[in-house]
Image (cartoon, rainbow over all chains, first blue to last red; front, side, top):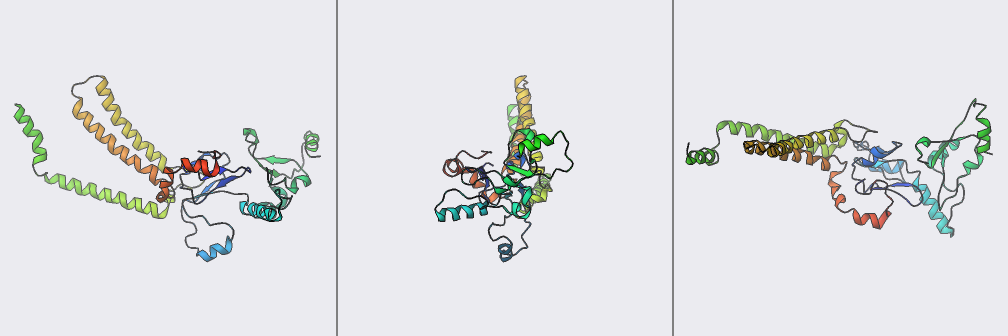
Length: 165
Length: 144
């Protein structure tokens, strides 16, 4: 917090700069979803550097004292942007950027994008209502989850069909 | 009692050798200070997890102990202020003791803003933050 290690990127992502983080845990306390994790101890001090590179080729393994959180696979987003830039286009195509969470469990997770990336394909295929985390608190989070509704209330069905034609 | 007696009584404390009990007391307190330095070294080398807190709680022992010492500091200042406001003539010596207590309590609390951070050796970043705000992310940080 007090050294601006975390900020909102103009694309709508909450960026985390590991090397700037001093470890005050202010952002952890303020996170409304409590998704930030702090490395209180050196969890990976027994892991040799080569092994870290094997398991995490794209992302630095955080040392103790830094805050981390799900970055929505920012390395994949950046790779997609670089590829698009190399082709000369400015916007990413649908499906070009897929986060690891979406790839491993496709229908459960997606997020809406801003200027450089379109809405992912999963939204077009969704078959049920979407759950938003913390919708009551009027946060409008960008992460939504596809829920598999079993045995829905009949009163809900017309509304669900209206929302997802 | 003459003024000379008073001067003698007060100055004798600083002009003579300290009594033997003082040496015992300073030995004990020096050991305690050394223990503080040892514990701080253990904290900085091992990590904040030695305090026993974990996700999702960010501040545990650090903030409660910080507030404790700040409270002690407030107590000393409060004593001085109340005695002054009620214009008590006998306040000088008590003021001195209370303010000394406050100073050391604030010094104890003052180690926390530095040592509760996960990487205190990078605390110098805190000094260079205004320029970072305009140059890198703009005014987009949610917590700055």
